[in-house]
Image (cartoon, rainbow over all chains, first blue to last red; front, side, top):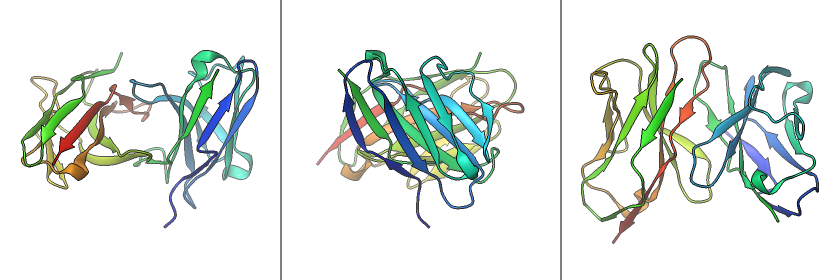
Length: 113
Length: 113
């Protein structure tokens, strides 16, 4: 069974630029999560989707971050404009249902200069 | 609110040494407790879990016991290998309501031959 796929794996941008990350969850998984992992800290949930609907986006900085999950499968997370403090690893995870184990992708490491 | 506190790393051990990584938590009710492992360049993987007091989770030689009286879930392994070198995250999921995990900061383990 293929795991959670993410791209790109690494991205370097200048502040005020925009960037987008892509996630393909495990086939059939209804729940998809985006986490932000700042160096030296545990992952922090940004947004949770159930199919193509948003369940929880209370910690998403909506003035600059946006996310969508069209057709309830792939998802895209966008930052516009980026700030230096957005430098982090962005993790995507999926689960068959919100009650069950989450499977994580390898992450996208973002560096904002 | 919910929180997880882990011992700071890195923890540096020689192969075949005994490992303990301390984890304590603060939560209302009776959370489920987890240990995740993140190998270099990979996403988080669930290592073990315990869902109620006195439960012991175990996997790949690692063990952790849910201690309600001390609000702890320490990770142990009797004999570590070089391949165990990774970052270990303790996490909890609150009973009822949101099933989003709260992660600790992570503890880096380095095992030398």
